[in-house]
Image 1 (tube, rainbow, N blue to C red):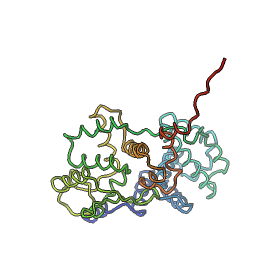
Image 2 (image 1 turned 90 degrees about the vertical axis):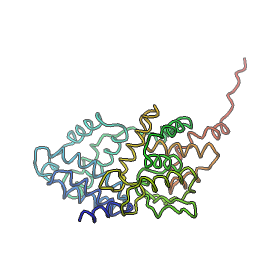
Image 3 (image 1 turned 45 degrees about the horizontal axis):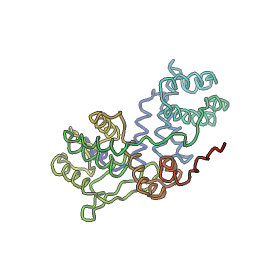
Image 4 (image 1 turned 30 degrees about the vertical axis):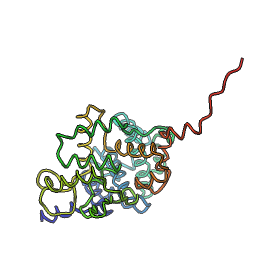
Length: 326
């Protein structure tokens, strides 16, 4: 039985594995609230949300339903008594202890859950409008990637790291993949004779095939031959301690943050390396279409934010400062 669970956890990411992860999120809710959250998850999938987004929305909704039932009253009974003030109170309290991205995620989850609850007759339809609005300007920020010097500084401090961690950092820095794609990478995804490596699509994106660079090839070979535990399974990166299961996305984030701290850099996660990869391609003159393909995006709108850091092209379209004549 233990072997079967280990074998399952080593399988590549699939929509079904994500649904099992969502079920784990549901199981952390109060027992009486779980059937409603499962129904909410099914409702979200019917609306076309990808399994990863369903997990995020259900996780946020779990916080809300557990909050409104903190007196141990049945969820259906409590939801019918929830007022607009209750919704606003919960959201403000949540927002005071969470950042902008978390607030926006909770806002979307609350609106979806309350719309779902109203359709099921569990809550008033007016509650959807009670979720506070957040002012948002599209493309208002800029990607927070690492500069070339910072990236070199981070990679130069890997001598004392394990072969696994070095290989993961080199893959992230070279290809700009997501942490989930590191976790999902399998042995058969590496084409050694063809010098290619393929990463599974994530968040409804496309699978990506990259050239296996000498640095990445050496890092992977060192890890696979000298450090990877001699166990079955298809995953490339495994946990260092038994049971040697697939390295999870959270572990990838932790090792990147640790590498940043060792290099004396601000505490940043894997996405900073993804932004650095895209920015580096822009500096070399690559088009946004090429960058979208290499990042696995299906839509150009997903990479339009990088136009704000394409300084060379921005200088080309900028007007000269008009001279003031007296």
